[in-house]
Image (cartoon, rainbow, N blue to C red; front, side, top):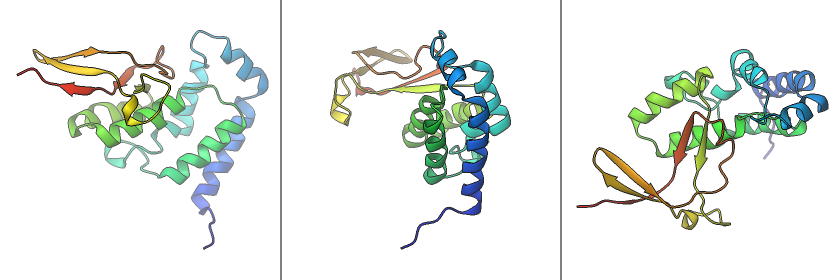
Length: 176
């Protein structure tokens, strides 16, 4: 079986390569790394408004481009090549995918359009240990009133200090 990128995928790669070559230089990466956020907010805004990368895997019904994982990987490869400092991984790879897999329709309607338009960043908190499987979730949500009380510890929260949306994984314990 032969594998080849489509013309659209080649265009994603070429435009990402050109944009990042100009905007994610060694100097820009070093400058972003020492900031409080760990990225350049002006560059993130350009990525969201000019390139629309954050909307790549968001379904069209929520204002996104509705593209697939191959397209996403092409973009991630170019970001890795240029060491892009941005909340892309936390927002798109963790946040968007978590919402697509586990959120209700109401939650998807609330959050995905905001991510697609670039007005919201997100991240996922899901591990409590030095393991990465589902058995590492040590947080419990207990029903309390109209909401839930979270109890436990979650580690490794990429971009948690700047994310507008924290998606928390927890086992559910309902008091009856």
